[in-house]
Length: 73
Image 1 (tube, rainbow, N blue to C red):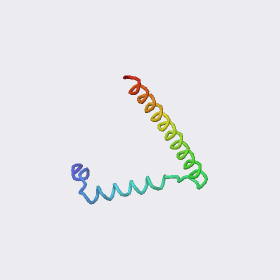
Image 2: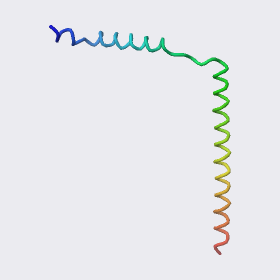
Image 3: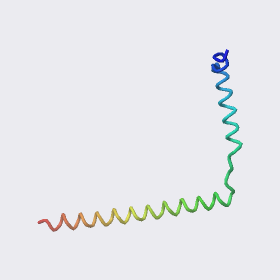
């Protein structure tokens, strides 16, 4: 008897899964508009800083390579 109770068919398992999903969705707290704009600003700032760092590193290494290649005569 316990075996029949423990074994659920696919539809019961799917219903249980979706009930759990709905329960978890109700727990979500969404950020406010001001928090979203603040986070967006932080992301853009980090992207700009990383881009400038990579650009500077690329230019510096290119200049170093050019210096090494021209003086090897």
